[in-house]
Length: 458
Image 1 (spheres, helix red, strand yellow):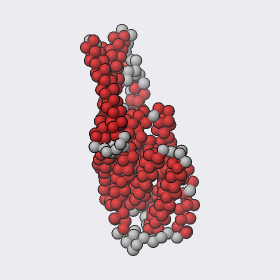
Image 2 (tube, rainbow, N blue to C red; image 1 turned 90 degrees about the vertical axis):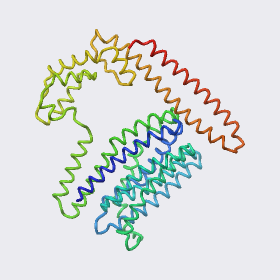
Image 3 (cartoon, rainbow, N blue to C red; image 1 turned 120 degrees about the vertical axis):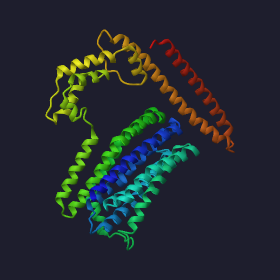
Image 4 (cartoon, rainbow, N blue to C red; image 1 turned 45 degrees about the vertical axis):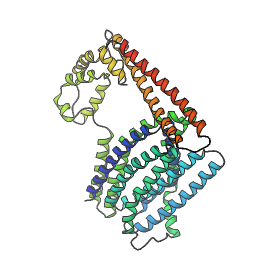
């Protein structure tokens, strides 16, 4: 049954990751690049504060909690978390007061710290108690409310501060189902204040993890802060979107395997069921391996041995000779070795279709990379058309960026039209001017694209 609970939790996290991807797509449509970049920077600072403040306490709870002392450990961790957050908010306030951090970033950092702390402390305690239903509900709520609150915040206020506040409120609201269930279980007789010994036990066990958690958070976020310092918030937006898609697609799922199956293994170990604990750890490793990377070939493809056909397909996708090593690795576990000569013969046949000029244009226009695999008699025409396609792709990207900026400035102008602020007239004139310039840039890009498409034979 515990294994079933872990699987349910893992599925819920995958579904939540999909919702998070939808949220990223919606947020980038509703905001300008500048606003979204400022949101990512505020979140980066907040995540670093969270890593230093809360991450070590989650590890402490995981390592120290037992069935007999679940309430005591949870209470100590929650109280220490509240004190740590209060201290962090004080430090952020001082840093802002002395001018080392803009007030907008300080506000965003503070609210996201509170939201992350409330949600992940609740999630850790609920998960360790194997409260699969409220934890699963909380996971869905977190993603769903993030999408809902964030969309409303951007539509209504169109600012990074409002988006960060919306995300914080979404995290706090999502944690409520877990707290309601814990109130009827480990806190059924009330919340008792921890003793000095409880605090010392947590501190002695986990204080070195403060450095580890902080270093991990800095490593995960410092790139955005550095990028903003050199190139501004707008450049952070495109970079951050790409990384967030990767994180939601792979990292979050891997973390979910660890916190679901490993938690159950720990519970089995605490019950003295060592065999069940080992089985859960095996399942965790197997699931992680499956998610970490799919083999280039299946067992059936390796056993069929149609290496010329496999090579032809690889060549048709413009693969290099290095692709054979991936196949060799995939088939090694089945005790099968590829036939390099047959595979290369097939790859060369596939390259004859891949390296046609029309396909070069299509590859470039789709933004796909070219690996310089075409034979000498086909390469010039293919590469010429590929460069034409690349120019079309780059122009489309510029138009998308201009459209994003236009949406943001039009939203800001719409709000100013309703404003009674004395300075609203000047800001309106500036926005009208910027919108006009962007529309001119867009028209130039569209005209350039049409000119390239008409002059390019394909």
